[in-house]
Amino acid sequence: MAPPQPVIVYPPGDDGGRRVRVGERFLGMAYGLLDVADFLRRAGLGEADPWVVAASPSIEWRGGGPDAWGH
Image (cartoon, rainbow, N blue to C red):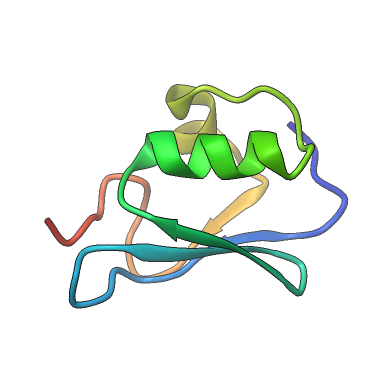
């Protein structure tokens, strides 16, 4: 997966969700890796499974890595 714009997953909010952006575009609130993978697929960034998303150097994880969810 090599997105043309940076993918940023923000720190968990009070409800455990993390905002996901590609460049200036807000994709949604993710509550797990499946959500992030689905948002990227819908944005046309290819088919990504959760394990690819977790290991991707193209994703900037702020406030914790792919295992940091506020559940």
